[in-house]
Structure formats: C-alpha cells, structure tokens
Length: 255
Image 1: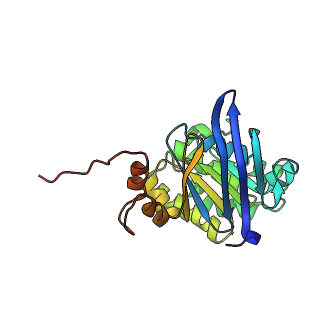
Image 2: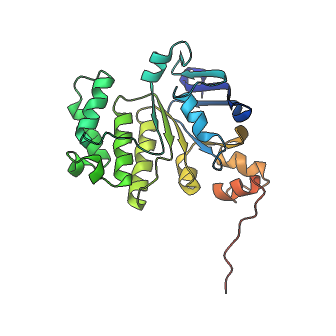
Image 3: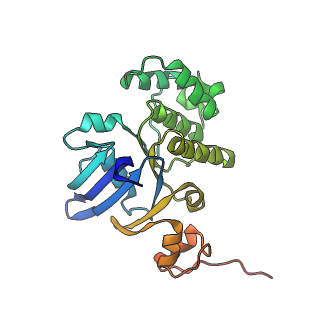
C-alpha cells in the first residue's frame, strides 16, 4: 500500500463528552480496495469514531481526511466521497424503496440513475419490494435499502455500523459479497463495525480492536494471533479478542 492509494486517514482523533473520553488519540488509515474491521465491546468508541468520520458529530481533536479532502475545512467535498450507514436504518414512512433511491440520487446530483437503481435492487434482492413502503419491509430489508442508498453515488469511503443486523444467513453471505465487491471492484476503502466476529474474520484485510476509545491492537489476523502468543492459524478472531480481554473461552466438552 502506498500513500497515493490512501482514501481514509485519521490522525489523533479524540472525542470528549464533558470529562468522559469516548475516543482518545485514535489513528488509522485505509487504502483503496481494503476493508478494516473495527472491533470492540459496547461502549468501546466504535460508533462515535464512525460518526466523527462521517461528519455527523464534531471531534474534540484530530484530523480526518477522506479521499484527499479534510473533513474540517473541506467538509462538502469530503462528504461527497463517503457514505455512512448506521446500525438502525432511518427511512421515510411515505416513500417506497425506489423513491428512496431516486431521492438519494437527487441529493447527490446523479442524473441518469435508473440503471444504477436497477443494478442495486438486483444486487440486494429487492426487485420485488421496489414499490413497497418501509413498514412492509423486514428489519434486514430496511438495512439493505439504506445500503443501496449509500452505494448509489459510488463512494470512495464506506463506513458501515453493524450492517449485518437483521439479516438471515443467506442475506449475510450476500452482504459480505457486496461489501467485498465494493472494495475490490470499485476500489472503495471500507470500515465495518460488527459484533459478528466470525464474519469479520473472513471479510476484513485488517482489524483494529478498540477499548475505552483507544486502539488496543491493529493488524492482520495473523498479527493479532502473534500478539497473544498463538501460532499461525491457531485461533479465530473471537478467541483472539477474548484473550486480549483476559477471558478464557469455554470449549465444548465431549461426553
């Protein structure tokens, strides 16, 4: 990876709420075509980090750069290059699925959008739901609609907070493929937060584990295994995470 391929750059990111430190001096970089998994327990600072990177909440300190544009100082250009999908999708009650996508297209100034809409609806298996309102959709389908809206303008930086919530096993497999496709084919830089560590293990190129707003360790899964003294291929991401938290995982006992 070279600096020329760097899409997401975060340096010294901190966020304080009064005396509470939600994120402290966090540094990360994600290059085009790569997927970073952000892992941690509830309250570790993952969502706050993504919300700062998306420009939803202002950081207390630090620099965030998206595709060469500083989020502070060149916010509009930076936000045009990114998308953020929260863990709970927020849709309009009286817009159908296809109307949501057309609305997103107008916001981003996309003219000839119908072919993109058709492709996304097919990719996420939503063709039969194109003219349904949100209340007729399952939790997983609403999540898919939110991600279709996010992908519509071909963002360079993709920030996903629990994108697999509400999906069945087939939906999870399809979502994994779609995320990998966005990184590899579209050369997007992707950050994914999820508690489904077995999915992140097969999805991500690198992993950052955070605790109390600080980076505990970052690297490939093999780097993390070495950090806990495990051999190559010996432990899963879940087992590595538990060891770093000082927890001994329980194993099934044969009888």
